Amino acid sequence: MSDNRRDFLKKGALLSLSGLASALIGKDKINNIEEITNKIDRMPAFTLPKLPYAYEALEPYIDKQTMEVHYTKHHAAYVNKLNETESTNIDYMSSDEVKCTHIDKYWSAVIRNNLGGHYNHSLFWTLLKPNAKGETNLPVGTLNEAIKKNFNSFDDFKKQFSEASTKIFGSGWCWLILKSDGKLKIVTTANQDNPLMKLDGERGKPVLALDIWEHAYYLKYQNKRADYISNWWNIVNWQKADELFSTK
Ligand SMILES: [Fe+2]
Picture 1 (cartoon, rainbow, N blue to C red):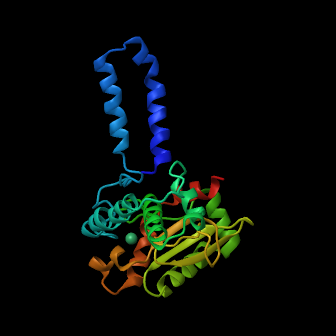
Picture 2: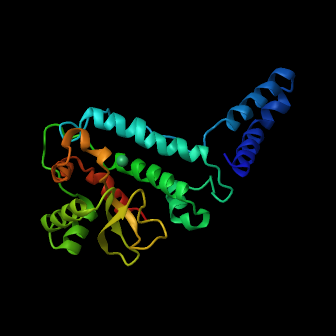
Picture 3: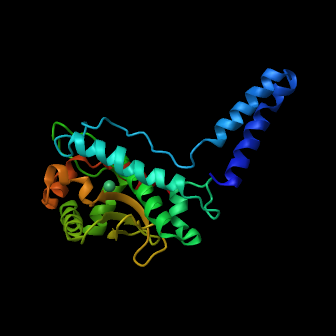
């Protein structure tokens, strides 16, 4: 954790407890405050978000083992690496979205890869939802209207997004982004980059995200990436995507 963040949190904790401490001043209470500040000192700057469903909840489209390994090994590794990598330039109090947006200010390959990995996966989990019964799963709300307006129809959008995902060479992500001009666009990024980062390529706010790393599908689908993509449409959380699209 950076010194700035640590000091900020310490001061906040001390201020909030100062009234109580002054009223009940005594050795035991002071020890309690020291104990709390010591705990804050040990808080990691980045944490693995709780998965919003069980590992097996996305079956039969994404299997339990893939989800468990993906979340507890891959995503956790990005978080752990970030916490091991101190950077005096990172504003630890800002959101991970803002940190990605300003990646050019604290440029390093290790931060770029692991901050991207952490942000991308945190978003990816929320954009999936269980659909064990295989019910029809279509876009909702204002995003539904915007997809029709930008891509002619949902079927045309689905075809273009699936093709872009299938064509990614090596590891990367496929995104639907909302650009600053209000238009939707399908883009892909390599490795753990994302469209928030100031890199070459189109930038915008992520509305949909699809992980195309082999670790996301290989245990179940092996080399059949197209089948993974085809099945992913059944578990897209369109409510969450609409929320991302509609929230400025
Ligand atoms: Fe992944």
